[in-house]
Length: 301
Image (cartoon, helix red, strand yellow):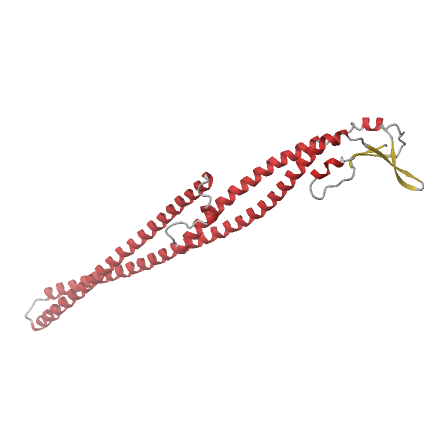
């Protein structure tokens, strides 16, 4: 039996498991801390987006963040979101102001063109009256034809000018309509963008909350298991191992408890267990076993 154990590498303690659990505790603490920071960042972003969507002048942070504002990390996160909020609000206001100013300019141009049309109409009316009088005089031989031709040319030119002014009027009205659409589109795009980002942020918050719950549970279990193994390690190492053989015969399989000097036969399977000391059972986490713990299984083949 001892030769079989020696060939297999000897009995090993739980040192590796304890070190692994200690590393898992450190990694778990880091994961929980990182998730907590991510949660703070997402909560601050959500508050900023909700304030943007409501058209507020300032961010209304939740009490969960306000109560921790004295914390350097939380305070810095809230201040950063305030700066982003102010920047985005100023940018949107500037864009909207520029579009509204353009619309006001086009409205003034529209008024000016309407006045020009009125002026053109009056001029055309006056020249047409003069042309009618000259045409009568030409028919009676009291005026020369060139004068009539000159007045007719003036009427045609003024009508052409009026047509150009009318075309400009239509163009300005089209630009005003286009500007109104741009103002509405800018507001709608901003609202849609904020709403979509808010939805994604909420999904991320839900995901972080779920990961945090899992990480906290895993960390709690690891923090309980690691100290229990540490407390039992010294006693377990000094406990006397229990040697067993699982032997297959014609009548079936049987498990035999043997000594260190018991011969091993071909086909035997060796089991070695270390019984946990009774004085250390209180240190085990809920659900811990009080039975002997198998640490090796050897095949005599």
